[in-house]
Length: 402
Ligand code: AMP
Image 1 (cartoon, rainbow, N blue to C red):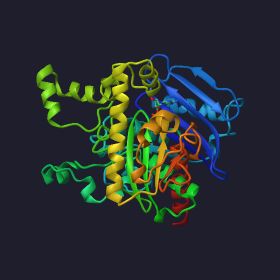
Image 2: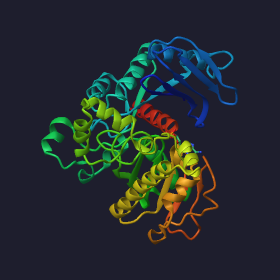
Image 3: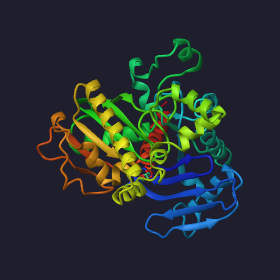
């Protein structure tokens, strides 16, 4: 079956076409500046140069139309017609407590996602726009929703309940949900395959370190804790997000700077993190360069970041009473030799011994711990799109058996 994977942001859209009979990537692309001047689609048929088309796209429906045109284009396309698409898999950020696994999208699911808009105001609306646009343009092609929050639904209450009046949980659903679930699930499964040990026999800490960053504690294949919370703002220090913070700071900044609440939220989401500390950049490549040139605030930002990752690793080892593998993934986790080294430095007493030579690798699957390291450290490039396509095929297969 050919699956189209769609990941809609507010003004951008990422897509892939996969032939799931052999899990082969056929084409991928990115649409940017949807609804803005200079809308552009960058489409890549695997093995060919990128095809770039700058053309007005006033909304997500027009963007998806461009995607479909590119996919069936005589020169750059990979399919003869749209009818070849067996199913569409949508990445959806927030499904609240409603869905613990992927589902076939129907009107009830769309309604449930609309109800979750309040919980993810930046993410769920564009996800819904993508779903509705596909529904209009491809009414007969089944669609599956794969949720970022689903993998974390196995957390026990002690991991997800906040210590605020319980009513706020029952009335408003305020609890830890966790995000990046598709990535954490994918790399945990790959780790079990690479180690040739059943997931049921493993305790894994997965470190998804990108612009957004989160850690998960995965015991016997199930997530038992994760660092992101009610929103993707909690947990680790990130590119521009503050991560864990004394909640009293919010009202204090608001009062001192005389800011409306929305602006404080914006500062914590977009102007904080390593950008806020360093004043240099949210991009770790820029920070590593600046730190190497002696910029002290860039050095501090990298130290604060790694300190928080180590803090969570320690906490999760305690929670699981040990760990068998630590996995690094996403932009920074896959590519920064330096950051992996700093995070794993001097953890020998916890059984974590990084091999500094094997660690000199970027973007490829590899075990990077020493042979005598009781805990295996593994680099695994994430592949959320493949995971979405796999779930899509599974759900469709389940439906046809019914
Ligand atoms: P992601 O959100 O997973 O795409 O990750 C993006 C982040 O990965 C960027 O902001 C960079 O900070 C980081 N990154 C990517 N490549 C490198 C690299 N070679 N060295 C250090 N950081 C990198």
